[in-house]
Length: 186
Image 1: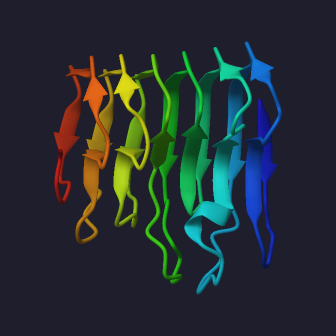
Image 2: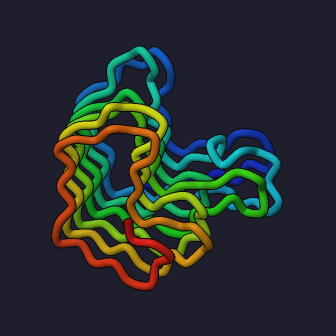
């Protein structure tokens, strides 16, 4: 596997990114570790420090698989927007935080994306005051499945393991997950 370490002392820090106009389809990323800069007192918004940044606005992003990954030390672990048919599996995500900055980080932030699967992963030990998995600020969303995951030790004030905010979601299936020692589970 690959280990990507971003030691950026300032400014944006990204691990894997698909940017505006990228038209990325049918990609697989597996057996990787993405280590963020985890810089203290960051003045960069958490969104500027993302482990996976799959936001191809107005372009195509579909059928990506992210498998067997360790993601830690970022302001946001995974951020996807305008994506469809993605699979996230066997991910170990922890130490996601704003690191003293002013923004609220999320482990997974999902906007305008449909038909995804999040399975067999661990989301834990995070200082994120946002959500473990957030469906927010866009949509509507359809046909997501979240199963076989562990959500634990997300105890920061107002942290939510799975949240839906300012969005309509249909066909969401959450089953066979374990939730332990979180501030709020849903």
